Amino acid sequence: MLEVFGRRPYLVLLGIAAFLFVMPFLPLNDYILHILTIFLIFAVFASGWNLTLGMLGLKTLGHHAFFAIGAYISAIVAYYGGVSPWLTIWIGAMTAAVAGIIIGFPILRIRSMPHVAIVTLAFAEIVRLIFSNLKEITRGELGFWGIPPFDPIQIGETTLRFGIGNAVGSYILAAVFFLAVHIALLVLLTSRTGLTFFAIRDAEAAAESLGVHLSRWKIFAFALSAGVVGLSGAIYAHYVMILTPISVAGPEMLITLLAMIIVGEVDISLRSHLWRPSSYRSVRAAAGIRRFPHASLRCRNHSCRLRRAAGTGRPEAQTATRNHVSDMSGPPPKRSPPSWPTYLVLPTGDRT
Image (cartoon, rainbow, N blue to C red; front, top):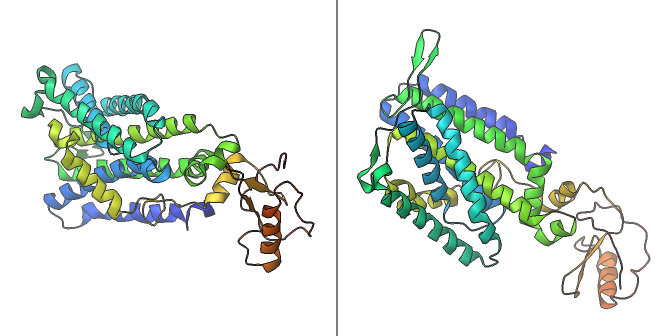
């Protein structure tokens, strides 16, 4: 199944892990490690956003709201509740996922992508205003400072400390989360769930006709994306240890993340992010259907049929397909079963 997602994705991820492992042993100053730490945190953010932007094709512009929700919820629970940040980051991620489910229901009712972008952008602005006006809790634009860092970890005689003043420990923590999130996403996307996501993106009507519940899977993908983004926001909060609404939910954050997504290519391939499937194989594998010899798909407007013989470059196949399209009510012309592979398999049903 991995051949659908590019060339040896796990090997490429192993190479990235090896590169990240050797960085702390190089003669780098703390500023370089700080830049690398921020890079890894925002790479998790970009991968989470790409689940909806690149995989499902939903042009959302409000994912920095989930980043702010994860950051603020984790910081507030750790600061006022005295809970360890190792636990609060998951609380922040789950809160962001719930927010993704709530905003996902009205978004899925909107068919126009520009309107989806406007609605999600308005949602992010609402979140920013909420955190700005909760001055008794977040101190508004004055900044929510005093956020506790992650508790130190003792490894033998070495103590790893985290926070903005501990570059090596913070870099190792960000690298571990980066690898863990991408391994989990790779396992998910190479499973049947991932193939279903790709089928929805590449052929939504065909996926629905094969029994894929579009709304349910889109809500799940939106919640998963929001949770990953919220997790990155929570890690960011306990690293920088100070938050302002404009810094985590403002337009500058949106522009920064759009640049990361656009420069990194909006896709799910291991050459840009990690994964790139074949559309029709995704539909077939998601539906769990094997090859059948004479599959056809009639368009919704009943003006054409997509047959496996089309596009093969064989004159006899193209002629047979044109003749069949011209007579929609008649049976397909008799010919020997072709030997080339089937791309999309659907039940023939009633031809009338």
